[in-house]
Length: 267
Length: 267
Image (cartoon, rainbow over all chains, first blue to last red; front, side):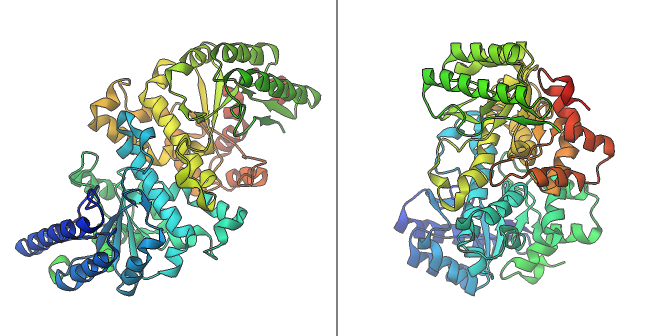
């Protein structure tokens, strides 16, 4: 079986602007080398120096065209700045033109003081920050304006599925929520793709009922402590979904949205 | 039919410490007067001057013993301080001794800068803050140590139901999460009560599947823009739950957890 690797939190954002480009090149070269060495076993999402706009575009092209990687990974905030910030728009416009698979992995929220106890940063801060990032991208109109990006949202969407109806209510009730989008948020949110890094059968069922198996892709969060390859597999096998649905979740969806999928990854 | 009223955000916390007591007395007297004037139509949760510990205890006793109110309302943070903060422990200990129904209504998170656009404060900040408040109370051991409080959590738990499995994983994986509780978080979270202020059938189903109809109480969030008495009723009527389950959600659960329930409120 094939695993898609990506550089987790804090990705390349532990250094500032210009330095991110060098770290990203090093990381992406290493991922490409690993994939070449273990052909059919590993694939990878590229890291992007988001705070150096020119380098971000160059690395995107290099990762997709030269390293033949399967998409990119970005965090839910970039050193505290929202993905919906206009400074990142040129990058996402290029990603849209190239139909890139963009994996959004959580980061600790920019305002982290409330999450210092009980490991609450990863436990609830991560899903909050994913939710906030996706909500802003949605209300800012990025999903509407750039419909060709294949957004893959980590941790089963954070809390997006549970809050989708509330976001729709906000769109109906508040003019500010309708400035950039002319359909309710759920219209756009159902077009995104969600990994299955929740090992709860209740969450998996809700996700299937709301977005469908063809918008779900198996994720493990391995090697994080909260992650598990074994549970990633068993949680899906344990559901009373059809074999076709399980097939989409286990590989079909991922194969349909990633870039440069090699023949070795298809069964 | 009978409605239970409570003073919403910012409750009495728009003033500091000592002043909260006077505002709370005024509000609670007005609620009690309204309930007396329209007997059988209105009931009420009392507001509490949480930042004046002595006055908080006095007002709790006055509200329950003299005004015969149905419990108390607190916000998910008190001027930025967590409900799990030790300064509030004497109040909750007294509430535990008296088996008080404590309704937790959301507040804008203490760190609010990230929620300024697109009305994101109420739309996602509210459920985040409810989730954070409940997670801290849980990991701090308050639910374990004070098991007689009937906690009623607003907005269908914020995002607690969707994040419950992740909280359990955190408890298993991190020693810090096990310092104050010896069962996984879901053990305590399933003992709480949740209002149904989500009008999504997916959320209502998840809540029923996880905590059961006898831990769900119909809520409207009226008169907030995002609230609706009509949807509160129709969303539950539209579910394929049994008549017994719907009866519990519509009134049975509330009648079983509130204080001083008058005969007029029972059918």
